[in-house]
Image (cartoon, rainbow, N blue to C red; front, side, top):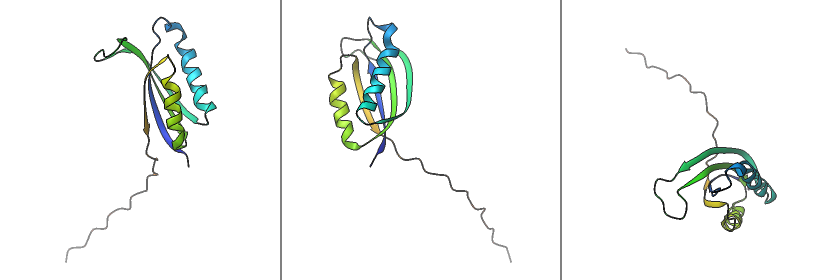
Length: 112
Protein backbone atom coordinates (compact mmCIF):
# COMPACT_ATOMS: atom_id res chain seq x y z
CA UNK A 1 0.00 0.00 0.00
CA UNK A 2 1.38 3.39 -0.99
CA UNK A 3 1.36 6.30 1.44
CA UNK A 4 2.01 9.99 0.86
CA UNK A 5 5.29 11.29 2.24
CA UNK A 6 7.18 14.53 2.42
CA UNK A 7 10.98 14.56 2.14
CA UNK A 8 12.53 17.78 3.41
CA UNK A 9 16.15 18.12 2.32
CA UNK A 10 18.93 20.60 2.83
CA UNK A 11 21.44 20.52 0.00
CA UNK A 12 25.15 21.23 0.25
CA UNK A 13 25.83 23.25 -2.89
CA UNK A 14 28.77 25.22 -1.54
CA UNK A 15 30.87 26.21 -4.54
CA UNK A 16 28.24 24.75 -6.93
CA UNK A 17 25.50 27.38 -6.69
CA UNK A 18 24.92 27.38 -10.45
CA UNK A 19 24.18 23.63 -10.53
CA UNK A 20 21.47 23.50 -7.85
CA UNK A 21 18.73 22.88 -10.43
CA UNK A 22 20.70 19.92 -11.81
CA UNK A 23 21.12 18.49 -8.29
CA UNK A 24 17.37 18.78 -7.62
CA UNK A 25 16.54 17.13 -10.96
CA UNK A 26 18.97 14.29 -10.16
CA UNK A 27 17.39 13.75 -6.74
CA UNK A 28 13.91 13.70 -8.27
CA UNK A 29 15.03 11.06 -10.78
CA UNK A 30 16.53 9.03 -7.89
CA UNK A 31 13.12 9.02 -6.16
CA UNK A 32 11.48 7.83 -9.37
CA UNK A 33 14.13 5.13 -9.99
CA UNK A 34 13.40 3.64 -6.58
CA UNK A 35 9.67 3.46 -7.35
CA UNK A 36 8.31 6.64 -5.73
CA UNK A 37 5.77 8.75 -7.58
CA UNK A 38 6.80 12.38 -7.13
CA UNK A 39 3.79 14.69 -6.89
CA UNK A 40 5.44 18.00 -6.13
CA UNK A 41 8.90 19.57 -5.78
CA UNK A 42 9.12 22.79 -3.78
CA UNK A 43 12.37 24.71 -4.20
CA UNK A 44 12.81 27.08 -1.26
CA UNK A 45 16.12 28.73 -2.22
CA UNK A 46 19.23 29.20 -0.09
CA UNK A 47 18.75 30.10 3.58
CA UNK A 48 21.17 30.55 6.46
CA UNK A 49 20.93 28.13 9.37
CA UNK A 50 19.58 29.39 12.69
CA UNK A 51 22.71 28.00 14.33
CA UNK A 52 25.79 26.42 12.83
CA UNK A 53 26.25 22.81 13.93
CA UNK A 54 28.61 21.63 11.23
CA UNK A 55 30.85 22.79 8.42
CA UNK A 56 28.11 24.74 6.60
CA UNK A 57 26.37 27.96 7.61
CA UNK A 58 23.66 27.86 4.89
CA UNK A 59 21.99 25.39 2.54
CA UNK A 60 19.43 25.05 -0.25
CA UNK A 61 16.07 23.83 1.05
CA UNK A 62 13.98 21.49 -1.10
CA UNK A 63 10.73 19.68 -0.28
CA UNK A 64 9.57 16.59 -2.20
CA UNK A 65 6.00 15.29 -1.88
CA UNK A 66 5.68 11.74 -3.17
CA UNK A 67 3.85 8.43 -2.87
CA UNK A 68 5.73 5.29 -1.96
CA UNK A 69 5.69 2.07 0.04
CA UNK A 70 6.75 2.38 3.66
CA UNK A 71 9.80 0.12 3.13
CA UNK A 72 11.14 2.54 0.53
CA UNK A 73 11.74 5.31 3.10
CA UNK A 74 14.51 3.33 4.81
CA UNK A 75 16.13 2.63 1.46
CA UNK A 76 15.94 6.29 0.39
CA UNK A 77 17.30 7.49 3.73
CA UNK A 78 20.35 5.22 3.52
CA UNK A 79 20.92 6.07 -0.15
CA UNK A 80 20.84 9.84 0.36
CA UNK A 81 22.97 9.57 3.50
CA UNK A 82 25.84 8.56 1.21
CA UNK A 83 25.19 11.44 -1.20
CA UNK A 84 27.66 14.31 -0.52
CA UNK A 85 25.22 16.91 -1.88
CA UNK A 86 22.45 16.02 0.63
CA UNK A 87 23.43 17.71 3.89
CA UNK A 88 20.26 16.95 5.92
CA UNK A 89 17.09 14.95 5.25
CA UNK A 90 13.79 14.44 7.04
CA UNK A 91 10.85 12.23 6.03
CA UNK A 92 7.30 12.60 7.26
CA UNK A 93 4.16 10.68 6.41
CA UNK A 94 1.30 12.91 5.30
CA UNK A 95 -2.27 12.23 6.33
CA UNK A 96 -4.71 11.42 3.57
CA UNK A 97 -6.88 14.27 2.41
CA UNK A 98 -10.51 13.83 3.36
CA UNK A 99 -13.32 15.05 1.20
CA UNK A 100 -15.45 17.73 2.77
CA UNK A 101 -19.06 16.82 3.42
CA UNK A 102 -21.72 19.40 2.93
CA UNK A 103 -23.21 20.32 6.25
CA UNK A 104 -26.90 20.03 6.67
CA UNK A 105 -28.57 23.08 8.18
CA UNK A 106 -29.53 22.67 11.80
CA UNK A 107 -33.22 22.35 12.50
CA UNK A 108 -34.43 24.70 15.15
CA UNK A 109 -36.94 23.46 17.65
CA UNK A 110 -40.15 25.44 17.71
CA UNK A 111 -40.99 27.13 20.97
CA UNK A 112 -44.45 26.27 22.36
